[in-house]
Image (cartoon, rainbow over all chains, first blue to last red; front, side, top):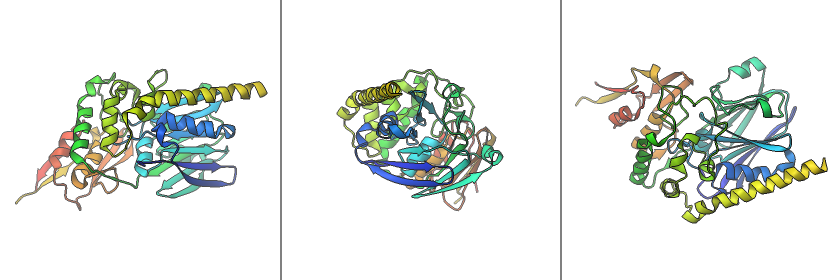
Length: 289
Length: 78
């Protein structure tokens, strides 16, 4: 996790050329994370039509905030998908707030991210499909650990002929400055599991979430969720817990983020402006075509 | 004095939520994260394996037993 800035990993994937770059963005801090950061990255890199993956600032640190946001452009509109699994917490535990993928490939590429180092390897389709990766992106499906889906993308297939799998080694731990504050807030979230709109079950669960609900593998298609839970990327079924500003403020501060109430209150406006700007760019694009 | 050790006799029930992994770093090291955790969860969803590193002493094994939503853990006396 990064307390004062956002760190983004840019992956450039071409037919034979694989490159990467880590960039620190202080200007993205005000967007908190998730869709806020995702929209901004999409706006800044609109012409290259990237695939953007973002996690929330609390991913892995609190229960029910284990989801990841996938954003890409398709047929003159932007597609926004959410899925669980291990990708969000792995990204946060490595200190990456977003991954931006440029380019297309016919190959099946495995990307291993360890600390500040990224390695690429090409695999055949059979090996690729057997991988137990944090995230696997192909043209018609996106999953985490081969189980947690990012919803149905068959209507908005990703423009990638081969596939990309992301394997992340979580190499950073955060020292807790105020253990008892954090512990109290963490336990209060755990105890409020009845406020979720799903029941606890025995299915494989997203990392950090004890529910194991029936929807864990399904993604979050068709849910209309408020901006604040989407910037933290909480589970859609835990919206009530994470749209409450005092709750979120306490959680963010307990791990060391210095966001104020005003930051969280202004967030829907900021994200709304970005969304409008992207829609304008899209409509201009359609007009010029 | 006999020590209490953490064991996972019901690991087939594990749903891979990782609460134990996070709790053990939190209670033993006062840290948030999975790095250096004496508990690791391996395997595919639905077939998880819980690995406990007995090279590191877990001082509060009962807390790990309590936090598991599927009751995978127990403590034993040595």
